[in-house]
Image 1 (tube, rainbow, N blue to C red):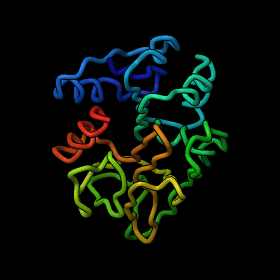
Image 2 (image 1 turned 90 degrees about the horizontal axis):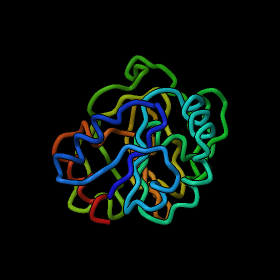
Image 3 (image 1 turned 180 degrees about the horizontal axis):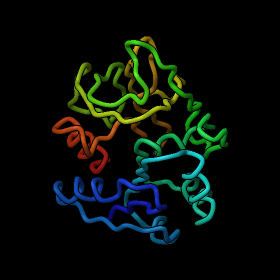
Image 4 (image 1 turned 120 degrees about the vertical axis):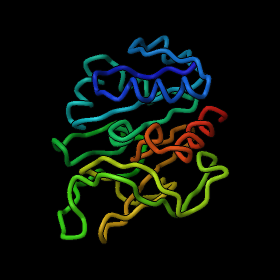
Length: 195
């Protein structure tokens, strides 16, 4: 069973639908015991990192998430709250990944928010099995995780190279939305489910 953490940050239905297309059983939950017993855990999110952290704290889920030993995948804001901190609300986050979340500077060739399809590079790890550098995925974000030792894929917006995916031990994260990224995104979710 896959647990999708419900902490009022949106995007749960599209993630659930993507898992359903893969034939996966899942449950939407904020129950710590259900999350701990799950085979895999997904932490999706759309919105504000400070609000996301407040919601996780309110539900007593911060230490629960940090303690998980099964594969965990954070998506978009779900990835951002797994980093050290975020400029969005100047909030301390879960500190799982060694990245900081910074705001994009607007530029003529790099509008903010960064929305649409963009390519991936420097792919590393099992999440990207069967996927080649240069594949396109779908992004919607104004804040990005910095490059760090946990970077598992990169992308570029204007002149800014950033972490498009992160990985540390059993924790994975994508700044892009695999559930909205067509066949490539579906392969990434299949790879996660098969971990």
